[in-house]
Length: 110
Image 1: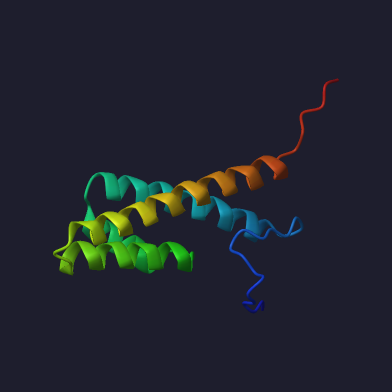
Image 2 (image 1 turned 120 degrees about the vertical axis):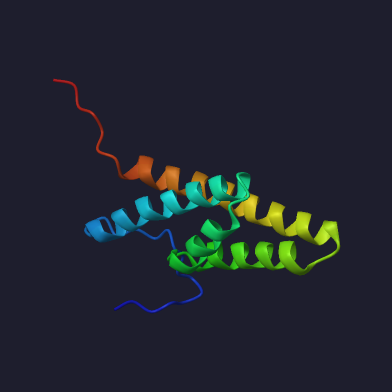
């Protein structure tokens, strides 16, 4: 059982564990779904994703955006939380792509 420390990130990968790699793939799907639901304004599906995702940062960003969207009358607050969510999705996708490309087996020519 692992414990959370400030140095622990959701992208740390143990090369000997397949479950960690599968977790990264699921996280990538979560980021794609969050982007899709946000683009299509499917707030109910975004709430379900917020509850089910293993990525706590993603969950918190979704929560802040939906809270601002529902309760804030100031458009700049909504916009700031939306851009914060989108920046996080962009960052997380780029980092997971880098981790995936490093873990792939190189093609050997025969």
